[in-house]
Image (cartoon, rainbow, N blue to C red; front, side, top):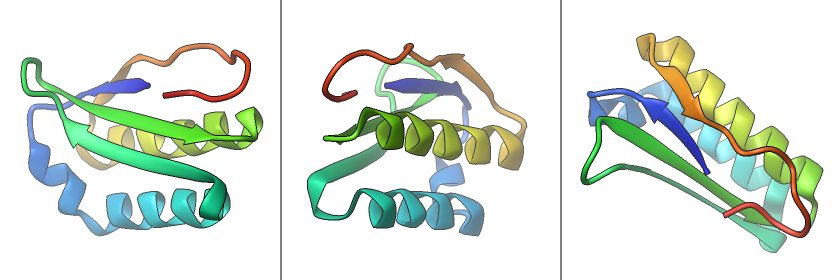
Length: 88
C-alpha cells in the first residue's frame, strides 16, 4: 500500500491518473489487481497493488503514486519496502 497525501479525491479523475492506473492494470494483466481510493479517515489516497511478480507490483504502485504526487503536488506518505509474494 502506498499512501499519497492529497485532500482532493477528484485527482483520481484526471487523465494522468486514469492513464497510470490503466497502465498498471495492463502490466499486471490477469495475475494482479489495482485499487486506488481515497481514505475515509485521512486526507490521503490509498494505492493498493497485488500480483504474483513483486517487482511489477512495486513498480506499478510507485508509478501510480508518482503520477498522483506530480499531478496535484501531493506527496507519498508511506511506501512499504519490497517483501515476499505480493503487496496489498
